[in-house]
Image (cartoon, rainbow, N blue to C red; front, side, top):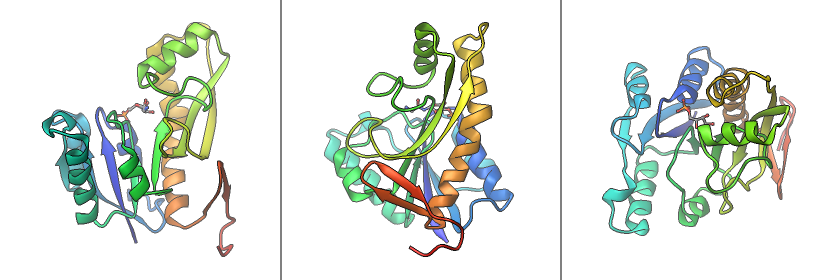
Length: 213
Ligand code: GAR
């Protein structure tokens, strides 16, 4: 079983999707080993507690330097023997030291179709505000590997969601979560844990079930 560390900052609905998938036996060869929150008041921590998953809080501003914070994060990940790190609505920037230590072992879910509405400043509700302002007819969600470039890593899965004329940022955010994020994140995590993701530059090939590496 591959140990998974899930990093969160807010409501934790994507964490919940992972917990539910695990309960249904859909995280093949994966087990959520810990939840690490960037905020002590994140509701995601309650979801972890209800599911009996160990919880940790790591607040960036409580560390004098980025290096001190990175050391603490890396120590936590090592303590839980994490083979995969999942950013599920995690709002603290991951440094090059951490992405380097977990190369192609960090997955992120983001609420748009890369390469639209991505990069610094595009997170949470802001992404949906930007999509509506631009008047796109289709948006969606992306699971990608995290590298040194913000939202620039290899794409694992994407799912499109239609924009409606009467959408508000809030209704669009909810539909993107329901129709896309909560589906593709557990699926991508399971594919990773099964060893079915083959990364070649920016491209990710999904091996067929039973196909050897
Ligand atoms: C999700 O929509 C996720 O895609 C987004 O934050 C929300 C977290 O919700 N992530 C980002 O914007 C990362 N750049 P949740 O806490 O309910 O899972």
